[in-house]
Length: 113
Image 1 (cartoon, rainbow, N blue to C red):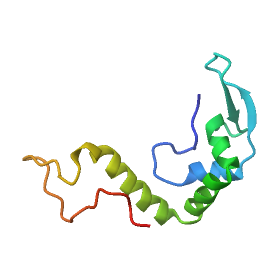
Image 2: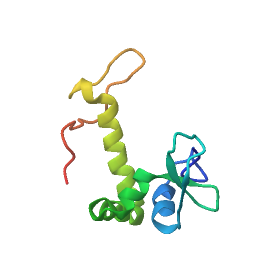
Image 3: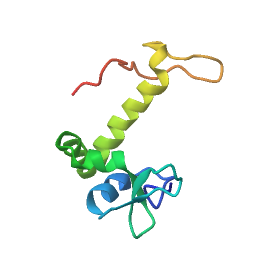
Image 4: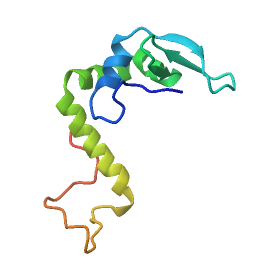
């Protein structure tokens, strides 16, 4: 229980900066149920799953890529978020009087890599 960054309501890659660059201590979660989490002396926390990604070479590759290229992180996150919230719509925009039609044709398939 806690926060992953010191600015949780602002967009940044500080989650990756914190995860990859800080030293973490494994402790029992204050939420109980014998859950564990990692704490840092600054008051930040990470879940066991976060540290598992840090140690996995495949995830680590992508995390370092996003850490070093904030524009790529923002673009890829934006495409993933758009896909997540519109997945059931397919290639059709949700139109109404309040929602204008998209100004560009968006490919809802997997992103081009």
